[in-house]
Length: 342
Ligand SMILES: [Zn+2]
Image (cartoon, rainbow, N blue to C red):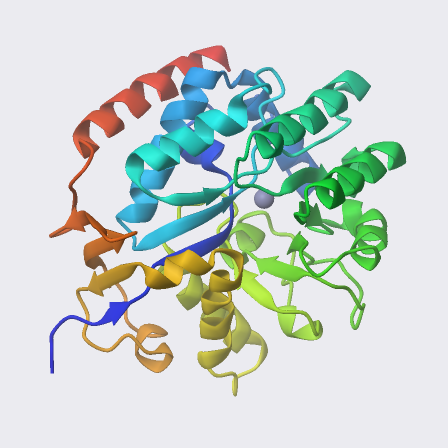
């Protein structure tokens, strides 16, 4: 038996590449005590400070870390209210340079007034019209006016793509999120669903982000409550999908001691429904037995080689087509600019 197991490329079903520079950011003046305050004092403060240069290096760093984790496809959800136009192309180009597949979306919101919402709609429209690979992004029902939600849904239908939207992540979005979920189509990607009522019927896929949900203390989504397919995401905390799978298993097991790791493994492999080409990518791992019952309990499994679209982009754990040290150095410079802006 070979010492090295092989899988297709893994898929991160929900990411925020703009958060790659956030690690180590200055703490907010007052510490958040609940979910809405985490949004207001951390993420909405961060996204307002982003410019296109920061977004570029944040995306490159996030894509590099994905490649180094055996994740060859990212479904991204982006927001940068003071640098909206062109931002999705910056992310797509950054990922192309690293060699990681990406499905982009701009998170439309009325948080910054109706002009901000319009600019978000236009960025999705521009990117999709120019042939970019994407979905229409919406931040969440609770930060959008009804007409904005309607416009986003129409735009998605116009381009025959799904809506990529946070749904009932916190109690603050329970009602609006449930209403939106009931309108969903099979090509929608609903994210979190923690506060959706049991047994609610919706179309589309549910992106489950166990680590992020624990970090924000929003509760357990318990995705088996829903009939719809589930995919694993990281919600911006890297793209190590084996880690996220292991955590999803532990979290499920906490609720049901009889649960099998085959369940979260199916969630992981459902990513291929979002980015089917990742199935043709080849990841050779440091561990021989790439099966759910092994990986549910095996830490530190890492990729040796990664082939994306026929090209070997990682060899002996090192990126081959880009200078990973340079990307980390440039990203650190941009992180310093970002922290100064905060
Ligand atoms: Zn998210």
